[in-house]
Image (cartoon, rainbow, N blue to C red; front, side, top):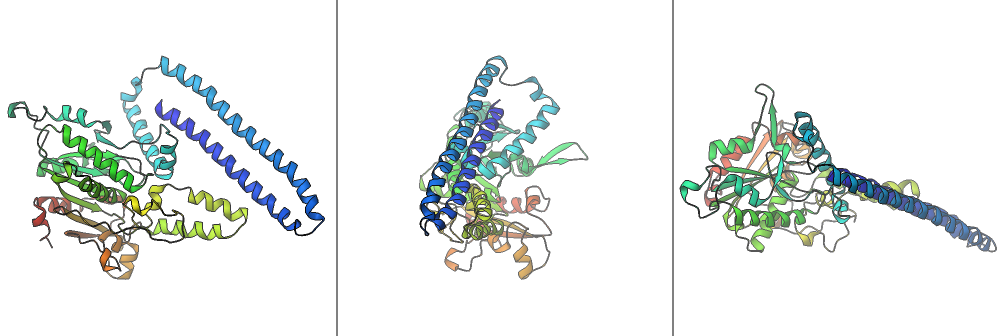
Amino acid sequence: MRRLLGLRDFVHDAIEKTTDLVQETHDAAARKPVAVMELIEPLGAVARAVDTPRSAIAKLVFDRIRATNRTVQAISDVGYKLAQAVLPEELPIEHTPLGKAVGEWTDRAESVLNAVAGDFLEARENGLSIKMSLRLAGRDVTPLELAAQLGAPRGASASEQNNDARSKVCVFVHGLGCSDSIWREHDELTGTERSFGDELARELGYTSLYVRYNTGLHISQNGRALALLLEALFAAYPVELRELALVGHSMGGLVARSAAHYGRALDHRWSRALSHVLCIGSPHFGAPLERAGNVLASVLGFFDVAGTQVPAKLINARSAGIKDLRFGSILDEDWADADPDAFFTDTSKHAPFVDGVSYGYIAARVKPASGAVGELLGDLLVQLPSASGEHRDQTRRLPFHMGHILDGVHHVALTNHPAVYPQIVRFLSACAPAAARDLP
């Protein structure tokens, strides 16, 4: 029901925003001939006399559309409240294989919508806006609920502790438009699912957790939210948390770096247990696709005609999270006083690594060859220098303690490719950050 209500609200908001855009375009197109005719009297007086009732009638029509839209929304509110009173919070079908498949599909659709318009959904307090949460078995779980499932409260005797609650935790952070399901891969032969988290639990004794979040928000907003969530996890965790690792894919790597920065800046307790941050296919200095969107919108917006202004405004309506990927912005000050649609303007600040924490990267190139072509193509979405922290300005270069480049792998495959897991193990096996710095 939450999703249905959110979808309904989103449709009504989209109708209103579309009406605003059409009215704005209509007024702009009508003003141009009037402005030209005003230069020639007495044509100017005639043009103004015609334009005044035109403007009033147009405003009346557009206002009527908005009013009708909101009336329909108010009527549907009544139906929603009646359904909410009659129907149970969880329908029985949700626990069937079909219900679970539909639920996973809607999770993915919701994640994509949040990537495109997540900041708008959050500002409108829409039910489709995803809240930063821990995930267990594909479902949201609070730190307290997680602690209850993993074991007895901290301080309990050894016999009361649950073996599932280990002192080492690895948190996986997904990328743009994805959910925690991106880390799971279905094995057709056995009919089971496998993930890096499951393998880490067996091989290195980690408790593996996942997060889900609104990728349309600013990366720094999600970094702060993750830092707060990890602080709540640290407080509720049933055993002493001695080692915490963050593994992020694509945007998730930037969110992990941002969380590490704000966790240390705010003196969070979990940040003292943070030992490793691993970024997999992350655009630390931006992604070419977002830069292309910025250039296209700027070029279209340069021409003062409806045929280019409308597409430019639609392109610029993409979320703040996507725009942060233009130059890899992970701090609040990167965007706080900046125009997000300025043409090719890099306002991102250098964010140094947190002291005492080991940082690593895994990058990929689809063309198994060195040189300019391999670096330019990267994994098709992130170029090799950006993923490996290399920058023309040496003061902004990211001094990763470990790095590895995979050949013949594309961006999305990095979340469950068999060649990635050994590199995660290699990185996390250097438990002491000082030891990781000595790795080749």
